[in-house]
Each structure stands twice: as C-alpha cells, then as structure tokens.
Image (cartoon, rainbow, N blue to C red; front, side, top):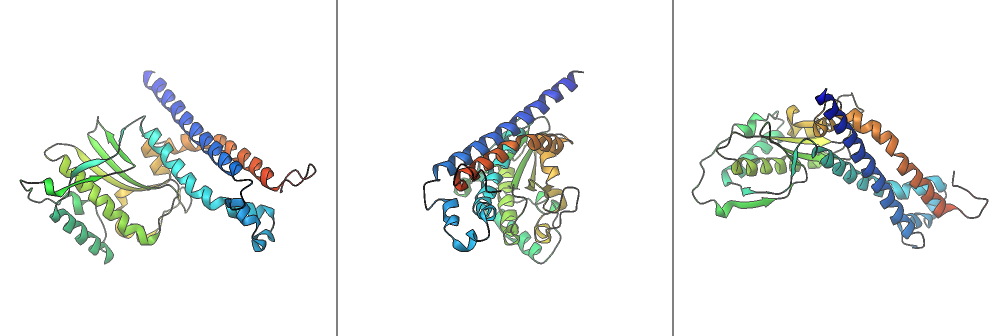
Length: 283
C-alpha cells in the first residue's frame, strides 16, 4: 500500500513538471513574439515582407516563420523536463573533473576508425580497456560539462546521456557524438578508479522519428552506437522516470498541457494578422 502511494505521488510530481515546463515555454515564446510585433526585422514580420512567401497565404507564412525557431527551442524544453523528472529518481550531476590519458584517447580514435570501417560496436569495446596509470596525472587533467549525467546511489551506477531532444541526429555528427561520450566515459572511469561503481553511456532521443513502437533505423548512428547504448523515444522517458510506464505518464500529461501552446499560437496569429475588427483570424 505504501509503495502504491509513493508511486502515485511520483506520478503526480511528473505531471506537474511536464505541465509547468510546457506552460513556461508557451508564456516565454508568446512574450517574445509580442515584443517583436512592431519590429520590421522580427522573425514573423520578416516573412510577411517576403512577397513570395506571403503569396502562399497567411497560414503558411506564419508557420514558415515560426516553426524553425519553435523546434529548436522546444527541444531544450524537453531536455529540461527530462532532467527535472530524473531528479525524482536519480542524483542529477553536471561537470566531470578528472583526467584523460593519452592511451585512452588513442583507444577512442582506434574504436572510431573501426566503426568507420563498419565493425559492429559493443560496449565491451571500451569497458574492457585498461591501461597503466601514471604517477603524475596533473598534466592530463580535464574538466567536462555534461547536461545529462545521472547517478543512482542505490545501484552505484552512473549514466551519461547524449540527448537529441529533436528526435534526430545529423548522420555526419554520429562519430563526433560517440567520441564525446567515450571521452566522458574515460574521464569518469578514471575518477572512480578503485571503486565498485559502474558507468553506462547512452545516445537518446525524445521521440522515435519513425514512430513509437517502430524500429529506429538511423543506420549511420547505429554504425557508431551499440544497441545497449540507445534510448530511443519511449525508452528515454521510461529511463528518466525510472518507470516502465514513464513515457505514457509524460505524454498523457503533455496532451493536456499542450493546450497552453495552442492558445498562445492563436493569440500570436491574431496579433500579427488581424487587420480589422471583422478580421478575427488568419484561418
């Protein structure tokens, strides 16, 4: 009974985090576009002055101006929501202060070259790597900021996540993202030397670009990441919620809270495109 109460309290906390995050986001972008309404160089007004875009209609004009900015900003909102939810189950950390040895850097380069040759990646490729520790480590000291670093004290497990909240990763960047994660892995491994704590690294997306429940098949990314290193869409939200139904809890609340965004969009459209008392909307 006690566990059920705690679970319900956690679910409510997740719902509140999602609701507040979406509400603050909607209020923020509405303030921005309201402030730009008389600015001819503002995002939306710049499109209004493009006769070729304007000729396609007001609805198209509005969204062509709005969506790109919205998409990049919304990705950060999802990341912040994920980190806030993670605090309910994990300790959320940031910077890693440690050292990175030349042998480890060389091993990272070797692995990336192998993956470039389409050698299948496995987590054992780096987990089983060890090297002689030098007496003087100061010259190898490095500080690395990471946005998604969670720690489970009960399990003594550290999780470093590279999240692409937009659900997609430019194929050209997959190699660089894996390199970054491996550097963070070895930095943390060196810091935790002679302890019984474990480290896992993940590449994650906030949604499955191929549809939830479908196979995620970005082959260039899979060329550099092992299956066990992927948290795609639903798997990511289940992980940060530490709940096998985490995605459902988050998305059910989002379906309610996204009304803040819809209402704000309507007000912004009227602000920019209402020409008279009889012209109520661009629809």
